[in-house]
Length: 139
Image 1 (cartoon, rainbow, N blue to C red):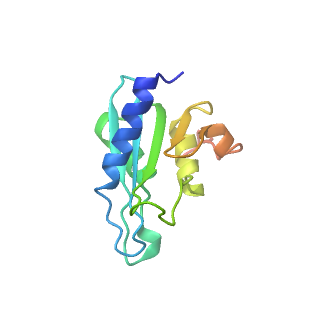
Image 2 (tube, rainbow, N blue to C red; image 1 turned 90 degrees about the horizontal axis):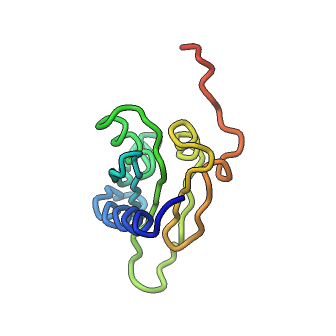
């Protein structure tokens, strides 16, 4: 269970991370933050590229940054937030895309919460009920 304090800290870190987004093509700035087992928080933002298939979503940026910095471990929770351009902005709460859901399923337990700023909280297993799983084989 995620405490209110941990939830608030995670959402705030995701909101702050959105300010670091590089989104010159879409104009949609997204931040994400992950909660590690030791209580540490690592954040990331979306990074776009003119070659669209090279874009990296905020959720994957945060997960990859945590894994690169602290080693492969289970992530306890993830929060995602999008900057809004004033009241009545066209974008509402966002939900992680399919590739991000697969990466979350790789490094988070099925019951780990995914907090969507301004939206609902869902477990990873609800977002991706049948993920690909490592088979133990390198090929």
